[in-house]
Image (cartoon, rainbow, N blue to C red; front, side, top):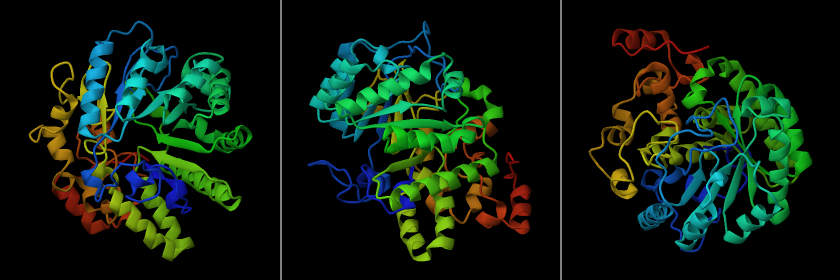
Length: 416
């Protein structure tokens, strides 16, 4: 996750205490600011249900109505929350499916908050009426992330249900009226990238101050969306718009929280832009990016996932590889297993990374970005991230080094 508001515009935003080790940036009393990003406990994405009222074409875990799963009981869920609280995780993100379709969601949220956990809801927003919004506020939910993937018909096409856009917008408004901290989550695709200007106009009109732009990860139903993947040129153009709009907000005196997610290359791209625009600021940004480490300290370290069957994954997109199951062992025990092969390797990326990522001059800031995307695309966890849109020239990959990579079997043909 790259906080564009912080990195590009030097704006203090909630979460920077954990993301960049900065005091006075959203930490609560008693929360310890990590000295190193590698020492962070994971934010846990918990797909608490597989049931969903929408049919999103890019759903990373193929959720829907009537899909089989082995969801935990209420009592078991509370014991898992006890374990997460005792393990010292900074936040639990209730996701799905659609978490509001789980009847005991609010009981579990109340329990989580009572255990001292930050509770976050990741939802499509269509089911948040005024009463639910008030309850979310009263229970002390830290944040509600609402998914939206374009304006009007574009969103409804991706969500698979006509009228979803209007119901989501009403859910956003209900949260705002209740005083709930709310933001939007958008997955960048070939269709909605054309809508970025309109989406920012929508943010302005609705008073939305936080938005997370996700890069597509081809897992679940999203594995069939190769035609919607952004080209390198589209990725750069999208980041340019996000930078420009975030800067406009800063200059207008607005406190915004604009982030990009699932591609740590965005941090390097922002740094390279600042090298041209404000070299002194760029050096400060380099310190932020290398403290965070990008992918070095994300999957398997700063983020983890429990799916609707109870399986534990290095992140929410790694459904094809499980490290254990909470029906059989506590999350803390699974996460702390020093001999689990994938976890062990993810926590020592430098010894495993291949290809252009291995020789990239910006590895300390990006950390090879999202390993699961490399796994899904190349069938090799340690191949370059196919989502990287930096050129060979950008990363210092000259003809000689290219030849060396080919000679040692570490050459991978990157998408355009």
